[in-house]
Length: 377
Ligand SMILES: Cc1ncc(COP(=O)(O)O)c(C=O)c1O
Image (cartoon, rainbow, N blue to C red; front, side, top):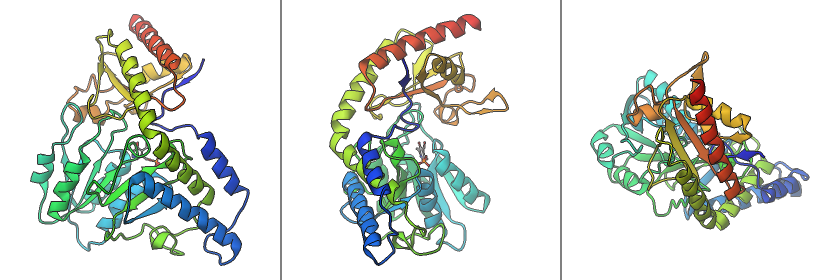
């Protein structure tokens, strides 16, 4: 029996998404062409854009299609900061995904002042810390919405309100949130929001950036001026069709599916509650519905991932491995875990194909793997 519990890394393609992509892939046409072939492609793109706007609750602004979350984050960060001739100040957090943390490191190396907001033991950013960190020359705040590793969901409305009141551009990396929990840009003061199709049953290599009305960006690259000049290059029409279909499915099934997965996830957590050395990580109230994460006190997360893989179960670890040595997870360190424990992070993330039997089997396998590894230590 094989069980895939790594849906926060990537999700399988939903059959309706595959069908939508195949239908479009069997035709062709450059959306910039003036003939019917071109018009057909343009219609697919604009229909998908509308489906994504609906999922995000966007009434104004626009959605720019990109190659995924990484490009969207880069477009947001460099799109704002490149408008300034001299380095200014920006604010981020200590728990960002590399697709935000690395562009910001680059800016810092080029003279920008950066404030990294701390998080508490649940991975939450305190809104008052954001308030206190604003400076007269702060031009961008970029904060993760839902955390990939520990599942914590930030109070985006509160954080956004602080930025809006200060007149500072607010970007959020919502790659783990969009399609898995309700995201409504019409109620939340956000200027830029990144998302990625492969996190919600769409294809890999496509995503986008929501850009609120009145926000201007400098493009990452220049050329034919597609996507309102913000992302030159011939659009990947079949991928965009897949993203649109995934967005439409998410809108229809997200709430119901979220409830089902939350129940399964809580059941899984319950089954593992008798392992005192396995501590839950992240926030258990404000949390992604399909996401479960733990930290093992003595075993490295990678060893647990390997052991589970041998049992046919896909999970993931939060720590990075370089030259054969496991490094502690920067996120768990930022949350206050000591280095010797911060390499024990694991994540189990559920999806629409996860059943109760999968969860029971995974719990049993994890208990056995831990017992075996502990005996071998
Ligand atoms: C929070 C977060 N941001 C950004 C990314 C990068 O997205 P993509 O794989 O679409 O480039 C990921 C992917 O895991 C992510 O979890």
